[in-house]
Length: 536
Image (cartoon, rainbow, N blue to C red):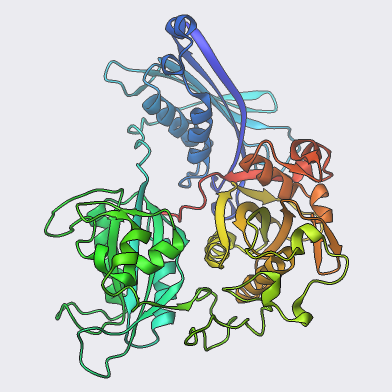
């Protein structure tokens, strides 16, 4: 029998019998040995004939970060079940779970539980040995065999959907913001893009009917199309939507425009939305969000081209490009007739024309700023930028998700990469969580830093956002220091960045090298690599 061994897989989980262990994550370390026939893989050199140990490592991490269990014996069993379910070629598996920081009142080096499980003829895990071993600093004891759990649920498919939002009753902009956050909080769902906000006259309705505000979001979800529709209708209902008259004013309207490019005439959910191809209040925000978007179906095609020939193409007018940042923009964000919006007084940059010519002398960069960042251009330059997120809040994951949505909704920004979530142990204060995002941005560095400050203020400074690096930009001004000097010494920045981009460099030095030299490298640990999906 051949073997594959993977040792030292670290992750943090809330497992243990004591009350605080249900709440405070601690590190678990797992070793596994798989027993299987590798003869075919040795001949074919094909990954399909062996085990993807990268996926196996992620399976282990997902179990550790998953539902609480009291005993590490149970945790070991769940890991064995998951791997046997995902890897049919494995005949026998050995699993050892270490709990190096277990709450034991005497000095000890480690505590671990080891189990061995074999696949039965039915394909489920079956006990191969009548006992598991539990070890504390070299001592062992015989434990009762673990109960066998069912096979793990296979990973769910991620679907891509486009949802249109609209409304014309009440505080519509506030309602739409709340709806975006509620969509993002749906089980297995992550909003990946938010369009600008558009205003459209209430065509075909009585005189005096309030204008509609409209936007579009792109999202990833594990929900089926009908499950997603039901969830969206639940959000509508919570905001007072009553489906009595189809053509009527409403506080909130949520429509699935596209779902995986599927074409369907299902009477409960026609896909794509049967009238989207001729509605500017859908096409205009969608094209603004994604210039390369395409609508499927008989009337489909590039969204920008459909907008150009839509009968109401002049009816949808840009209302706001930063509408998701409530309270940090001027109250009047409408576009004046014949001109673009003016810069926000408290941001110092124009959401439409954010290149240097559009700013006043007082808003121009200070002398000495890098010319590559502030050179006068007819069009803003798009650059890659790295932003770090840090928070000591117990609600850090949600705060990070909301901050990322806000960053992505800023005109000229597009989030392109999100790192795993890390835990940071600190001697001089409370522990923290950290992550890193990569964006493409058309904002100058100073303006991007100011925007990040506005997002921090919107979250009452419970999350810390820093511009770590920007492609082609070097600046040492007091309010615009790029690259961020202290990032080279912070494993809380370097570790998630390296996880997201193994080839990353900072100031010409490989991030991998900087992390190895960082004084706090031993105080950071991976928490989750799928944290962006809200908990189910």
